[in-house]
Length: 120
Image 1: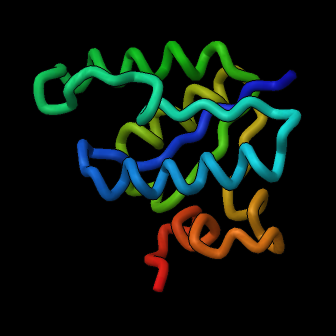
Image 2: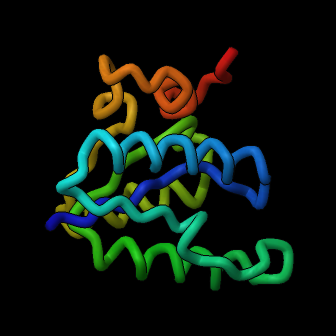
């Protein structure tokens, strides 16, 4: 079974954690033969009490153990997500966007968040 790392902007914001949760839930439902892991959910150290570089190191180590990366939201505007993307490319991991995986699936809320939009 392949393992895909789900990269989503976080910044310690509860709303970003909730958006990542919706996306991961939709991906896991649509692709049951792939294991999706989210660092937002897997690495539970307190954001405001953890050195940024140490937290990013945890994320990058998790990514190294994955077969690919799924990019979500406005990942291009996040230093952490861009770092994850660059490492995935360096490691020759599969890189795919969540909106490509969720288009035409009926998961409208997840698709909106995957595109970096709000869901109305």
